Image 1: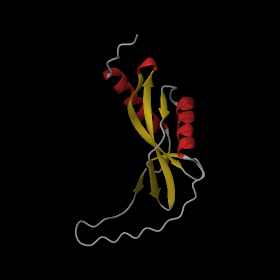
Image 2: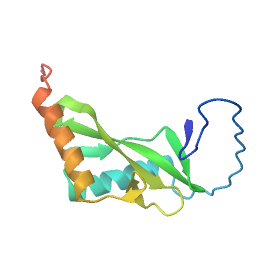
Image 3: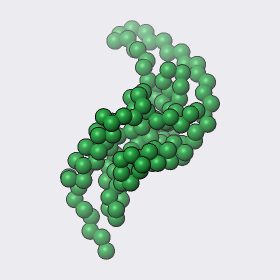
Image 4: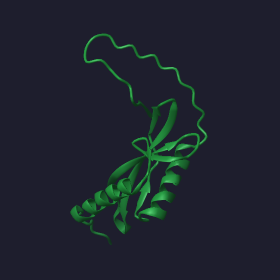
Length: 127
C-alpha cells in the first residue's frame, strides 16, 4: 500500500524538514470503502460505475482516507477504465473528491469520462 501525504509545502531549494507524527484509527476497511463507493455510484450514477479496492491511504489535515479508484465497466467486456477517484474517510465512511463532498459537478465529470471511454472502446470478441 502507498501512503500519500497531501497539502505538504515543500521548498524549491534547500533543506526539507518533514516531521510526520499522526495517529488515526481506521474503522472503515479498504474493502468496505470500495463497497461504499460502489453503492453510491450505483444509486446516483450508473451500475456500470463502481469502485475497486484501494491501494492508497491519503493523510490530509490530520485525517486519513482510502483513495478508491472509480472504474467504468461494460457488461461482458468487463472493466474498461478508470474514470476518477473518491476519497473515503477511514473513520466515518464519508465520501469526498478533492476534499469536498461529491456534488453534481463531480458526478458529471465521471459520467463524461465514462462516455469518452465507451465511445473509444473497441469491444473484444466474445464466444
